[in-house]
Image (cartoon, rainbow, N blue to C red; front, side):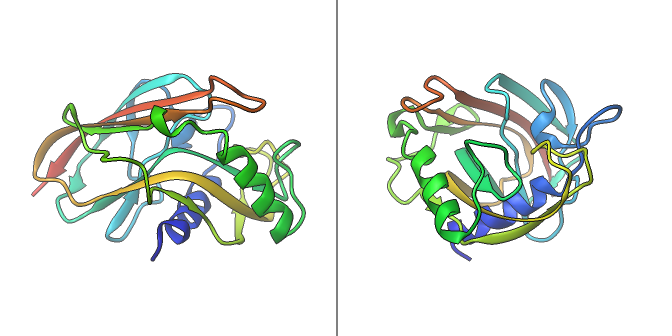
Length: 200
């Protein structure tokens, strides 16, 4: 699968997880402290979520991640969909592609960062930006991160992504992020840190 295809799968995963009052399992809404990184995860690739608030977050995954599991994560990204309110609302494949690309163009490539155990692993950003295909998704009724009524929708994502090969057993710290430097949300920053334990 390409990064664009993986990004669609990442968004399908995230959008399907409820949010709202009470116990909030959506990983994008979790701030600091312990989080369940296994929510709706399966297979050889797991996903890490950023922060939709623009706040710096430091999370510790409860439980272990397998030493055979790769990790796919957004340095910083955006999506436009048929369920989003303006200015992220779109109605068809063409308008969703244009909407997502226009916002992703405001990301500053020099703001992107990705480190593992304090060592920066980005060597330039060429190849890290990817736009998804026009994909379908389903959000929970009422309580979802789009604030919509829920149900089926269509979307396109654009932004910068990274796929980490499986980590060695032990404890690791993964930090990633970036920022929008122009457009309607200049200064919006993603800065997420995950402390993870990798099992044998």
